[in-house]
Length: 88
Image 1: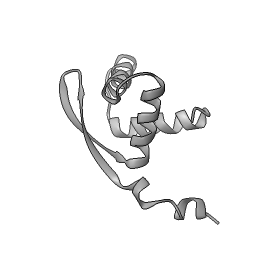
Image 2: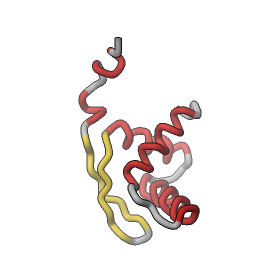
Image 3: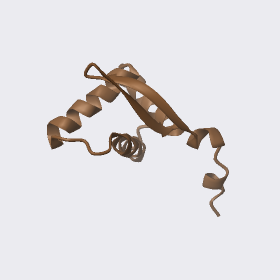
């Protein structure tokens, strides 16, 4: 039934940790490889570096909500929202 999911390439759901500078502070973010690919695609389409794009999301959410409880989850939701809006 779900060959689409069970047959997915293992590399796509492998966890990858990246160090990114956000507002001058280096932080590590751990996401599945597929989410890093989507974030890179969005950043490229926005003509931003990966770091600049992630920083932009961070600042926007911080401005709207005052805090970010789980940034990795927020990035995953941003990716799925992007895909649901037919942006890919």
